[in-house]
Amino acid sequence: MTLPAFRTGSTPMALARRERLRKGAAALILVGWVAGLALLARRELFVGDVQRLAEMALRVNPGATYFAVEQNGAQIGFASTTLDTTSTGIDVIDYFVADVPAAGVVTRASARSVVSLSRALALRTFNVTVTAPGANLNAGGRTDGDSSVVYSLTTNGQPSDSQRISVRGPILLPQLVPLAIALGEDPKVGRTFSIATFDPQTMEQRPVALRLAAESLFVLVDSARFDADRAEWVSALTDTVRAWRVEPQRPDGGGFTGWIDQQGRVVQATQPGGLVLKRMAYELAFENWRISRDRVAATAATAGDIIERTAIAANAMAGRARIAELRARLTGVDLRGYQLDGGRQRLVGDTLIITREPPSTLVAAYSMDAERPRQWRDRFRRELGAEPMLQARSGEMVRQAVRIVGLERDPRVIAEKLNRWVFDSLKKEVTFSVPNALDVLRARKGDCNEHTQLYVALARSINIPARIATGLAYVRGKFYYHAWPEVFLGDWVAVDPTFGQFPADAAHLRFSVGGLAQQTELIRLVGNLKIDVVEAK
Image 1 (cartoon, rainbow, N blue to C red):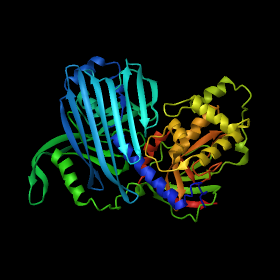
Image 2 (image 1 turned 120 degrees about the vertical axis):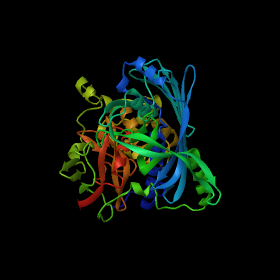
Image 3 (image 1 turned 60 degrees about the horizontal axis):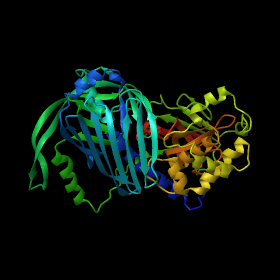
């Protein structure tokens, strides 16, 4: 199949490269968040037990820990966590920086968070800065009692997006989850924990079930000395540390994966994109990385390209015509937890069958003029509502949608008009920021995430149910991570304003629905999922 030509003159190959670059940058920024550079979390393990939290806080020891960031056994970055106790609270400072090979070039990204906590470990204020080529993100805010968070997000110099988000009970930050696990009770293999995390991208609470899966001993470098002959730092003293492995109770559960010691300090952690954080002395974690980086500054190796690692090869597909039906056998991963079955998709055993929507589903089951019953509104409450970075009720968003739609009243025609406008109006350009619908509307550029976020906001702003789907799309013989909207007409219909398809062809494999943050659930497919295309027509 031939991809539609963009107005900017992008070729399918350029599109694939841009998509790969975007996904790699997204994965890189994601690493920054998951490595502890996120905003908020709330733990149900200690809900209502403020006194116990206060007692735990007294056991928090100030100090700093350092980590080497590795990919495929080679160090590519540095991270650190510093805890500073005061008479009135605790300050936690996290830092992350890495040089990641991406699309043949080395991409530098960094993130820094400064969080202020009360003596009971409750969040007071936070400020997070993420920087990558072409992207600058700053998020900051404060709590307002135990009931809400006042939150402001600025991306790439665009006007800030401020929100007040309701929360339930005291909220803690993600990097304190290992600390709370260790200080709450004596670590024991088999012990389980229920944690309701707060996703900083979607501003939604999400339950995560963790368990202590194993116990082991680690030999960590305590101090280092400089070896003049080797011109690098080497181990001077080591310490044997007992650690417990924390992992999700279910493979699709999400959450922290790694080893923590009895004080709740991370010993080793696995991050999305195949990155691993290993605790060690500062000189080995940072100085040796700096020395090595200087030695190879002129070389950008592609062997560990994080972008290409997100491509999942298909066995065979000639071209990419507008595929009406695709059958693919999915093996190598546990498919439980993914939203593969429903609507245009059927999962039969390990075979996924995708059928492009027939004309009958493109006929709206509702009217733009008639009052919709309460049951209908309740059914689509989420798919019609505004979200922190999906401002469906913004006056600016509503006015733009009305200008696009004009006097048209047929929901099907309206949905297609919005798809065509987003496709025509947005410059196809790799971006690195967290997608924000108003920012996209003003900047008029981006790739699949930005196209999807804006389309969904426009559709919802004029009361057409729309949601975000994430999964894989076929481009030049491989499946790459992709996001696209689904709009409700007679049923849910997949559309793709990035490729200009209405409806989207059957070469879109949906794995999740409900937000761009769900892409984190797709990370475990990398290097594991095998796709055998049985039939494409």
